[in-house]
Image 1 (tube, rainbow, N blue to C red):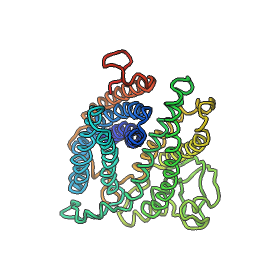
Image 2 (cartoon, rainbow, N blue to C red):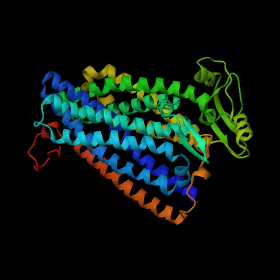
Image 3 (spheres, rainbow, N blue to C red):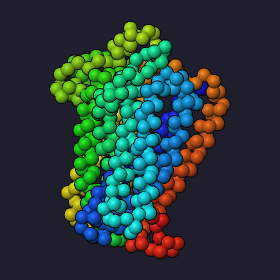
Image 4 (cartoon, rainbow, N blue to C red):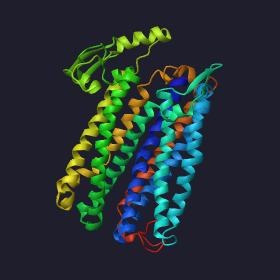
Amino acid sequence: MEMVLARIQFAATSTYHFFFVPLTLGLAILVAIIQTRYVQTGDEKFKKMAKFWGNLFLINFAMGVVTGIVQEFQFGMNWSGYSRFVGDIFGAPLAIEALLAFFIESTFIGIWIFGWERLSKKAHLACIWLVAVATNLSSVWILIANSFMQNPVGYELVNGRAQMNDFGALLTNSHFLYQFPHVFAAGLCTGAFFIMGVSALHLIKGTDIDFFKTSFKYGAVTAFIAVILVVGVGHFQGQHLVQEQPMKMAAAEAHWETADPADFVVFAAIDGQNRRNSAEIKIPGLLSFMSYNTFTGEVKGLNELQAEMEARHGPGDYIPPVAINFWSFRLMVGAGLLMLLLAVLALIFRGKIETKKGFLRLMPFALFLPYLANTFGWFLAEFGRQPWIVYNLQTLEEGISQVVPASSIAISLTGLVLVYTLLMIVDIYLLATNANKSPELLDAPAGKEGSLWI
């Protein structure tokens, strides 16, 4: 029971936290690009755009910080076995993230907030670029730590503990080299669709047409580039995982039996107990193509991979939860392909977007697509590694704390869910309220009704 509750707690806090992260990553860069245009042209419209979207960025950033701090405490409390085993490695990138990236972004975000009209244009612009770079650099160190869990490198086992012996190997982990570009592009995609969704609401109402038409254009161009990167990098990342974590990819495809060529299962009624699909709809050869860029090629099935794991690690169930991985993968890919279609249309329509009322009505709903794709993508990344907490080195059972009672975890889990739900409601309310305001109120005197706090 302790392990189930601990897993639910970490999954809940991670999911809540990651609702805020991609928007922070992408919106910081977009605000920096827009402010760069202001410095280049001197056009006050771009200054107002930087303030308007920057205000929404700050709200989201604050919520992300609050929800992220709690996660680190859980490593020592709920997962002490994991912390003892891998702390010498996992702790290093987390410490660098806090001492380097987070300090830079938190320092310069304050200077940027209060630096309008106080700093020179170029010095003030440098502040937002430092925030944007440091924010994404923060994700670099987090992903380096996570990539070790997915693909352990640069370590040696000493007295039953993993100790780092090659820091460079951590930085060049093959899993990280695919994972970071995917997350970076997903952040840009989230920021771009957020800008397009909010801009669409204003364009439908006919308010501040020029301002939000320009904002929509920036969002459309960024969305198109970002979705192409997400899809492209995701494809190559999947091919890499076929070699690095074949069990994860076989679970994502509900692929039970080794086959050459391997068919892609569009739909499956998964019978995990008997390790088969009781019904399925398949596309011949497509899984081989997705894995090797050719319609022939052997893809190992879950049953063969299970036998290999038993031969290597001893008796046990090494198959991840297939249904969760299977549907997470399809929901992630489905959301991604829908975003690609909408990004192409947005790029085509951007010149006369204010006249495309039907399309504009879709875009506020499309704002949620990156959130779906991001969330289910992480479900696949983490559930697909089960039953390992560190792939091929430590299982979940070995990583759980042995002294924290289930009742304590249940109480803290309930409290965290309640608090995080409240924070989510506050975040959505603040974003919606400020997004609905006119940019003309940005320079209203402090304290006046309708003024923005930036």
